[in-house]
Image (tube, rainbow, N blue to C red; front, side, top):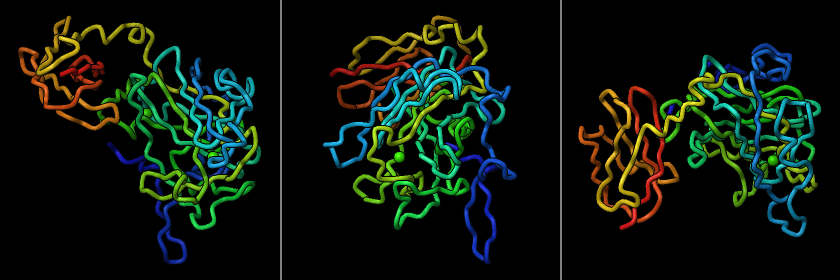
Length: 328
Ligand SMILES: [Ca+2]
Ligand SMILES: [Ca+2]
């Protein structure tokens, strides 16, 4: 996995000390906030599945956040309302056409911050099969001693690869290059984008953490029906060309028997040039076995426990993920 986009990770000298600094607020040189009316956007999310979080984690009596509904996260930014996720809540978006990794940024997530300083943040994860989600490596250099507080501000340049950096009508863009090469993810065929509310508490029992393990601060507690990340929209910048999108690529590969015991046979229905590589991973993305696919397509399975695993096959025509069931 490539760690992050070098272009937005600047190290500046301040008072003789090195500070990590990321893309700054809207209007400043180097800002990456994207206007919802930019011609770069070619499509918007068309479906959302919600898993709301509580208004305040640890205070169950308040119930979950409830402002907005799933439909308000689809369509163009600013065109309908927003959906509020609550602490740690999730919204998983789908698209009519998968997102692909083109030059530069590939999609953007829109929140509704009214001033660009009260910033509610979210992790962003992507999947090309709806099962395996991979989180963008993110960074937060905000204060981790006292946190942000209910109505506190966040400095835009202190966070990277977290949604919610920019005010209403301006999206935070993400570049799939950051995840190129990740097992079980085809960056040229992203079918799902998931935003996961950052729980801004500094309490180690509940705190959210960036890729370095540092706690991520955002306004907390926010014990309101509208608490947590407010998803307005997800805009697509690069998508799979129409002819390819409609082509059912998975059908090129067949795996049998299912469930399997000691081996699987992996066969392509159309001719596929060599080499072909495969990888077997569990549903958390941990790689169990990987190698070049033998000419006869037979893969001897490792001694792993009964369950569902993902088989990824990589050949000249692309990368395919197939669930496999092992039942000994
Ligand atoms: Ca890209
Ligand atoms: Ca939050």
